[in-house]
Length: 318
Image 1 (cartoon, one colour):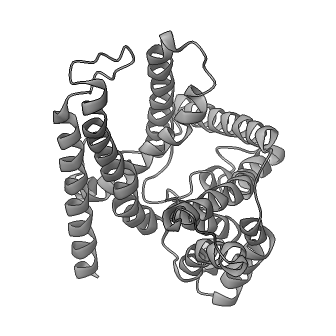
Image 2 (tube, rainbow, N blue to C red):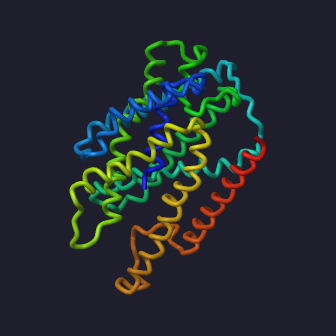
Image 3 (cartoon, rainbow, N blue to C red):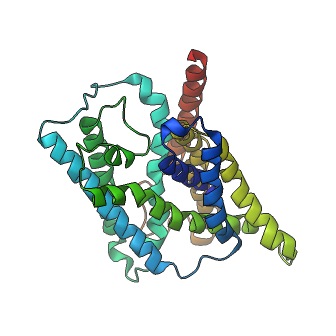
């Protein structure tokens, strides 16, 4: 279920080490991708366990990096040195926005680990509300400081590159190195975890009661079908923005809109004969009505239509 995530992570590392002017030098691009595969690919064949401290360190680095980028952008804007002059509205970007916005749902990836350890679930609704509010604040701050701080025509797809390439924004070498290497740290820790998760999902998907997998299938085939597709895409894709839009629209829509909506709908139908239609769940969602399931599915179809139209129109103009 996280195949598109592993693809983006592999491509992101390549974008960090290979500046845009090197893109035509295919051997350099492939060399960096090969090094990434050589060092992190083998983790797909093993189990990523006891990663608590590694994930804590990664989360801490994210907080530091995000806060640093927001503050640096605000300082530049406060000095009236911002280069961004965004239009009030640009409808030409709406189709691609649908695909990119799907990635905002990635924050739900951490909800199970946030809710599960809570023994007293009385205030779980408040906790989730605070969590989503905090995520929204970070999204808004990062987005709005970016569009006013940097010229939109020169804005890099990978946001951290805007700080490492511009001494006017950040002229402290150690901090520039930190932001430059920040994607490396997060990719290096997240790629193995996501890859192992996807590999285990493959095993669960094809599992049959009473059956076992041959050693070759279990230890070789499943890791390879997890690792090879994203690496191939990273080898032959240069445009990170297009990749985000396409994978966000198609794979992301299925994973984060359609599948959850269908799970909710059919789970309710399955439980209704057991618990009854009038059963009250004190932790029920304010969006519990079936209307919201249909709304999510309609939204998903809209995303697919807009992004598909955008891809076709963009290719037609070339």
